Image 1 (cartoon, rainbow, N blue to C red):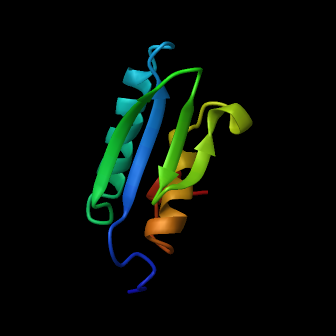
Image 2 (image 1 turned 90 degrees about the vertical axis):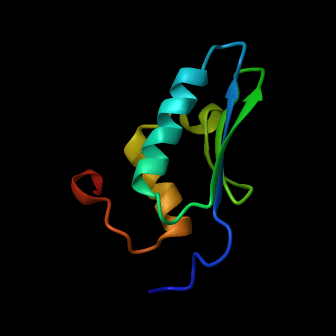
Image 3 (image 1 turned 180 degrees about the horizontal axis):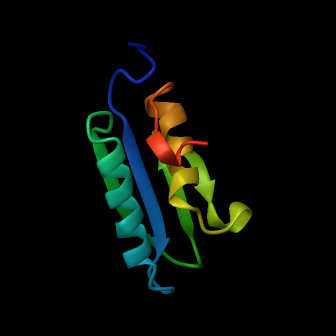
Length: 95
């Protein structure tokens, strides 16, 4: 087992309340919590404005809608996995 993910592993999803993106953020949060239930110590949803939809792992931006568009769950899972559980298989969605 690698020690790359020792200590707190916090994911934050910041979403635009004006755009009504809470359902999308909540769904993505559920996907991440299901996939990384033993690796994550925290997952939070942060209300924002101005079209924001950003995923952070330990305060590091791993997905920004403005630069990358809306994320496919598999792409976000890969980005989170690379930071909290390198080497973890994502099963059929890994590619």
